[in-house]
Figure 1 (cartoon, one colour):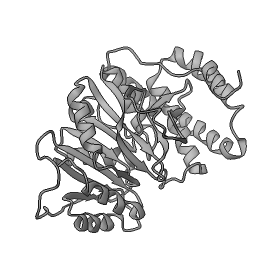
Figure 2 (cartoon, one colour; figure 1 turned 180 degrees about the vertical axis):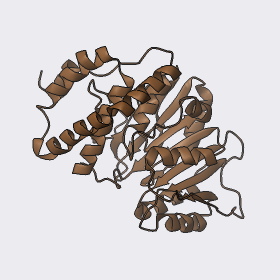
Figure 3 (cartoon, helix red, strand yellow; figure 1 turned 30 degrees about the vertical axis):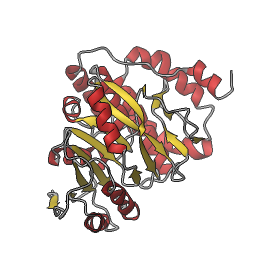
Figure 4 (spheres, helix red, strand yellow; figure 1 turned 135 degrees about the vertical axis):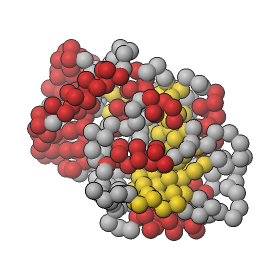
Length: 342
């Protein structure tokens, strides 16, 4: 097994801008062939108005020189950081968990490499955590690159595990400017308390290589009694799905494979039989078979093959979590009204 190489970067000659008091925030970025985007991401971090930030970058065995670009970008922007190169692609969850072991912050901010933060993003998150001691996870208002169209304003989950974004593809006219409790927030820009992340057992590496790790984490954190809150004042730009290709066959396969695993791990058998299965049967009539049928069938077969391991993860979760399951998903009737079929 190839051991990761950890390369500690330089300390800038001048202190980062912003106040040097308050909790330390560990910004964690996982790279996988992200050379095109990591430069602007690091540059945006250099303009933060909050001074107590450490940057940890983990490269999942990229083939496009991502780690070198990250180092050069950090040097050019005057940003102190640690770059850790993994010998193989261990997936989004494992790479973030590896970064957690290198971090020191009381608050962790997981960022995708194809994001750019606003100068006040981190300070807004810190203020929110300090004002809400019962908040375990905070999510951002995420924009498309035009900085006007909303990509994510918190999320909800349908009965069959489909993850949906509030406000997706709508112009920002202030309609999502109030904080709200949500079922989950996107892992493209997710902040979590360090102790809560540890108590939740970190990210589940069974969702290899990507998708549903953050949804699983949010459901677990809510089950632990903490709030998951969408914070509109914390803003991020996201170019989205640069590693798997948005709506590609590979995307559909990974998404649906991990969606089914998420359901089997986190929901009661009664819920799965009475709500998830009927929803799935109805939903199959709404999808585009040319785009999704083949990867969806592959995803079903993969879950059959992996069922013993998924059941082990389910039992481990039940041993760790003594509180009731949270099953506040959106059902068939509400979904049909939403899409105009009722």
